[in-house]
Length: 321
Image 1 (cartoon, rainbow, N blue to C red):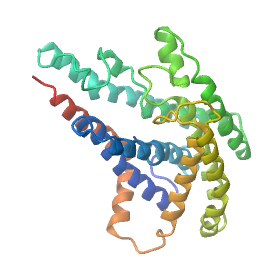
Image 2 (image 1 turned 135 degrees about the horizontal axis):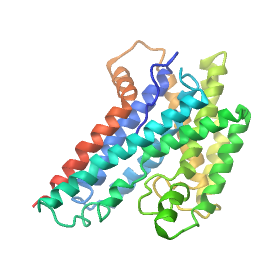
Image 3 (image 1 turned 120 degrees about the vertical axis):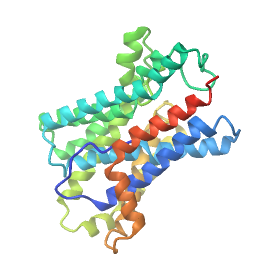
Image 4 (image 1 turned 90 degrees about the vertical axis):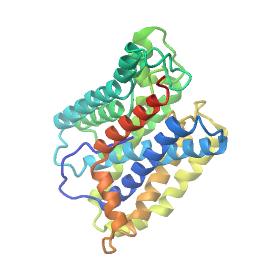
């Protein structure tokens, strides 16, 4: 998962880089497990653990910080955000082509593999080209925030937009439209469809809340005081998230990234607590580990792209005759 889409910023938030750097490491570990090791080790507990990490500390982190970093980016006008989003969407399809589609087509053409559906996810291979992965959703999220900025929506209203997004999610997840158009073009918003790894709803929720968070952080006169107030402020969010997760009032699936209302609230609380924890060490002298995490964060898009190619090609190599 990802995402750094901005050029050098006017002022970097080091705690953002630390948390996103950790998410990069967890992302690579998660992809290695899902594609390489999970089929070789029957360990439901570890599978569930990897799922939990992905729900809370990988994709939601990238999407949240995608929104939060817009505030300090030099390229944050609606037009610039829209075209940055468009580039990400295109990059997502380039990755889809190189990750599985073209290698499988070529290997199948030369008779080196049979139908690999028992090892990989989908067959025929065209499904891999049509996948909606986090690049595409990040691009759509940038376009969504570009629209809100173009409409001059006040910062205080962004939480209302986020709440609307997450409340619409279970309703949209009930729509199961048949046919290519319904499953693919509508499915990107509803989350229903075999090609939809990351649906726009509720993923956009994280970017909107991140943008709201980034604005108030930027306006804070005392950054340390801002972060020290977080533990108490997040308690109601955790309580509500736990209640909604337990009683499942939203009637939606809590599977990976198709998060329910409760899980979305808990994810945001965990992300903000992670930022609070990271902020406690930002004033300390620079050491190798935080610097390494910051390096991963700054290069997350390239790392995401390259690690997927390496892991996917390794997975394909295991099924060559």
